[in-house]
Structure formats: structure tokens, C-alpha cells
Length: 221
Image (cartoon, rainbow, N blue to C red; front, side):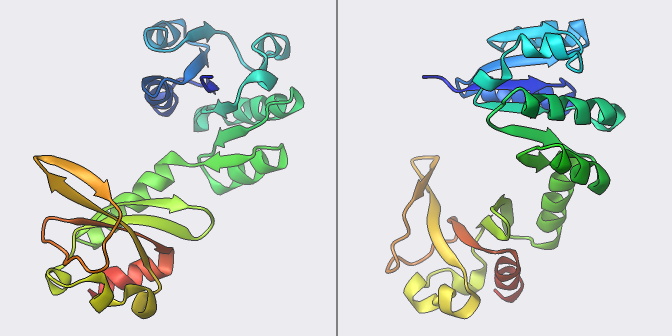
């Protein structure tokens, strides 16, 4: 059965999220007050509606309780509406509410009104870009829980040709290599790491570690 996700607020973030979910075969209901934007979203979403989501009666008709996830993707200019919509979604029994915050105060308020998860896409992008600028070999870094990150990086010259057994990364840095992305026949394949297999120059190493441990690794190697 397809997952059902409601995305409220079709700015740049909300529209991009709705499109990405739809491309992954998710049943997306997209909502915004702008009829033109809604018409654009209708081209790739299962359903798209133009109405003000702070209208309790109108929002109730979309049955938030039957959706797997409800996302309030409204931006900073609509912060009051975003708070109201988040609260209404919880009152209507939405099983999981993800809300977008644009600053720390808004994040605290959204938590108080019941959001299960808060996202700040601008802050997250800024942090990821800063890390890529600081660490030359860093490919990408994605948060995993409170203080864990998944980090993809190009191996520095100091470890090329050496095995994971030799490097003893868990003991030295507190990081765990969970995969190696290796190019085979022109395509990248993610595979389980063989601790006896020498690391190649064109590999991409995938590690899981605390933020501090991943940073130590990138600084020392």
C-alpha cells in the first residue's frame, strides 16, 4: 500500500519535497492558497488543492488522521499560520506531523503545539555546505538521530591501499565504516565493506559516527 503524505505550503521547499515524494511513488496531497502553484503541483501529485489550511473545516475534510505523515512546510512569512496549522493537524489526529521552522523561537513554539519533528532546511543546507567547504574530501553528511551522522568521504592518500583492519578506525576515532561506494562498469555501487580489501583511490567511504568523531577523523586523516 502506498504511503500517504500531505504537504501544506508549496514554496520552494514544500514543492520540492512534494515532487521528490511523488517520484518515489508516494501518494501526495499538496495544499496551498496559490491556485497557480497548486495547478503546477497537480502535474505530479496524486491530488492538489487550493485553500487556506488555517480554515479548520476545510483542513478537516482532507482527513489528516488517515495520512501517514502531514508536513507543514510554510515559510517564515507565514509563521503564525504554520503554528495554527501544526496545532490543528495534531488536534485532528495526524499520526506524524513534521513542521518547518525558520528560527529557534519558532522551533520551540512548534514543539509546544505538538509537532513530532521539526526541520529547518536553510540551517541544514548551510551546515552541510560549510562542512564541504571545510573538509575537501567530504562528499555529504546526513544527520542520523540526536548526535549521529552518516558521512560519505573520498579516502585521503594516507589510507589508500590500506585495509580497514590496518586502520582500526573504530578504536582510533570511534567511527564505523558501514559501506563503500565503488564504481563498477561506470556506475557507483554501495557495498558492504570487506575489512581485508585495500581501499581504492576512487572509493567513497560511508561511515556512521558521532558528529565529533566524524570531525576528528576528517581532521586527522
